[in-house]
Amino acid sequence: QVQLVESGGGSVQAGGSLRLSCVASGRTYSTSSMGWFRQAPGKEREFVAAISRSGGATSYADSVKGRFTCSRDNAKNTVYLQMNSLKPEDTAVYYCAAKKFYSDQYDYWGQGTQVTVSS
Image 1 (cartoon, rainbow, N blue to C red):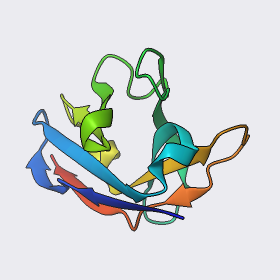
Image 2 (cartoon, helix red, strand yellow):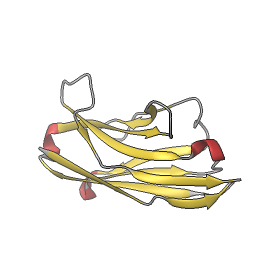
Image 3 (cartoon, rainbow, N blue to C red):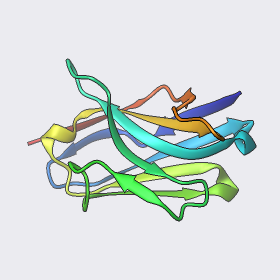
Image 4 (cartoon, rainbow, N blue to C red):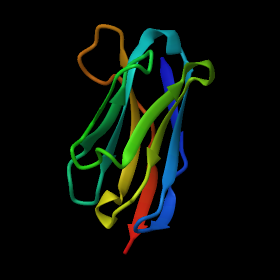
């Protein structure tokens, strides 16, 4: 099993920045890519960003491209999401997730961290 714990959420004004962290523990050697998702009140969970195991490949939702950056430090078993130029529509609970090798879905999920952006 793999445990994921997010941190770094909070309240910020529009235009501000936050950096989320996700620390993985347990059988981290069994995981490949990791991702960030978010869920706003009354809405379905949506993809935000993903990063390969090596960190050499990333992908982003169109809504966050150019504003958010996903990175990882494998020595610390940590994935980051740097969020700049935040908008009120970025308000949501942000979740970290990890895939097992050869899996086509995210197998492990964190408990989420709240991000609130005020106008």
